[in-house]
Image (cartoon, rainbow, N blue to C red; front, side):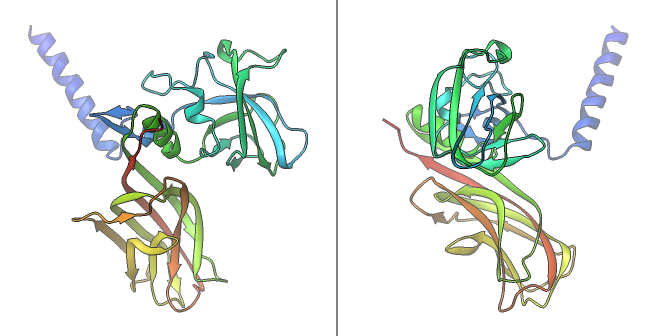
Length: 281
């Protein structure tokens, strides 16, 4: 009995140590307490089974997912192909010519003859869009928006609900030719703002201040901050969350300088909020 108790104690200590070393560990459950969690939807994986030999508008790739029934999330749930492959959801092709593309058209059907049968796949999505690079067979494909539009689409298909999302810009070097720096990270245009955390990672010069927001609401996440030195942070907890927008399309996170362009500088921001989703039918 003492050995068992000691073993349990050791396991608990190791578990506590692991959590202490990973304070930002996130759950990958996609549907918790009636809420749809975007990070869980970002865990699907696909593979190019037929690539594009040309580039530009109207080019296509064919993507399969393991199992053939639909994308499987990290929590073991299989969702519909249409929740992942549609004209609202950007995809990320992660090969040597990596790029993010929002489809202009999607057709879901049987995989083409001669495909590799990735994970026994029989169902494929033909994704048409503006591809700037060529992508060959075997290129990995995954979410281009951290699961946000996938969660919104699935919530609508399930009768509607509330989507909780998190978006992280990583370190963004500020534009020196304009007040606005447009990140490659997106959030829905319709949301209740729950807060943000931002940090100046490289001292900002010449500008009067910096703010984090979206088009039409440039300081909604972090209002204008006149402290420009590296290490400066903004923590914006919303006691009364502001409602923004009326549609669930995507819009880029912006970092906006005040009065004059930045001469140098970089900012990292993480933002989070809720988007109400109406039933799709």
